Amino acid sequence: MSSDRPVVIPDIQMDLRGTPCPINFVRTKLRLEQMSPGSLLEIWLDPGEPIEQVPDSLTMEGYNVEQIEDRSDFFAVRIRVPA
Image (cartoon, rainbow, N blue to C red; front, side, top):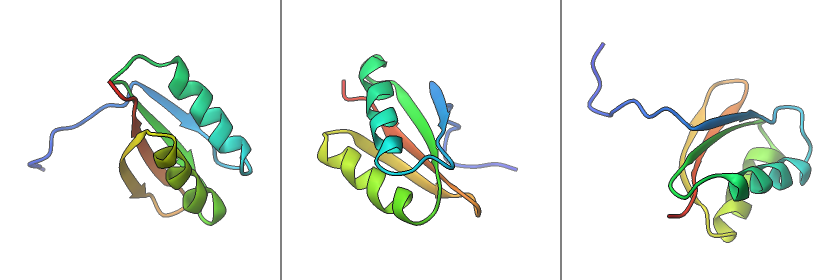
């Protein structure tokens, strides 16, 4: 199986399934603040309010949400720490 897109491995993964809003956003933001510039964080969010709220809130905080992937029972969101 070949793909034109390179495989990008996140520096850190956080499973936030089952974590309510706004706790999931707070945990994500705290983790991003601890990471090096240019690092990639992948978080796993539930459907509904978490996936509707958290990416937008991160964008408003100045983070680059690079990818949102629907993995059927949850969403994988990749966020890049600003350089």
